[in-house]
Amino acid sequence: MSDAASLGNAGACVFDAYGTLFDFAAAADRCRDDLGDKADELNILWRAKQLQYTWLRSLMGEYVEFWQITGDALDYAMESLGIEDAALRRKLMDLYLKLDTFPEIEDMLARLKDGGMKTAILSNGSPDMLKSAVEGAQLGELLDAVISVDSLRIYKPHPSVYQLAVDALDVPADRICFMSSNAWDANGAAAFGFQVVWCNRYAQKSERLPGEPVHMITTLAELPALLDL
Image 1: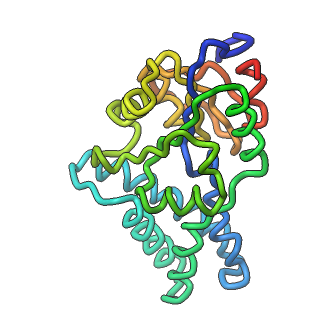
Image 2: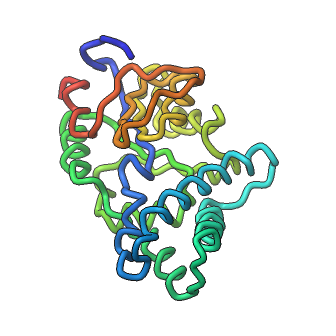
Image 3: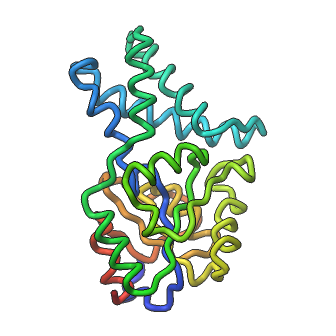
């Protein structure tokens, strides 16, 4: 990681959605009474398969919306754990549309907007999923754009996905500050040319991949100071 004191030349802040702004564990957490001691295991497996299916479908050229991938991953996780409960599946999927944000998100975005920064989401999420999440968290007024990969029909970390933010915001790649909690996404965005701040919420190890974030933080509450805001 860089020892640079700030990211003062950034013209826009672009955020990954799931795991970065929205807590993907919230759905399973709200079903602990139903899931019992399988809640944590289901959450881990659900998320792992969700990501794996985005990468594998991109390589296969077999795109489907992230909503279907999320359901397919949940089906795999539930079957793997021996959970057969159609009502619970519907409940978990419904809750995924209404995920909690992390505690610092609203204040952090407000500080960026007050400082004149453009803000956006760039996500694998399908448009309807992102619309539901943003409206549920009441973040709409704090975002200039909500960008889905769906228009390209391919998932991160394909370089064309990151180009969507450049085009939507009319800001050069080297002046976009990109935040993700996913190490692979942080590396992919850095390899593309963004200034990347890896929000390492989950104490991950660094990936052995091209691209290097310029900063690592553990909460997005630390971001405004890096931008001199």
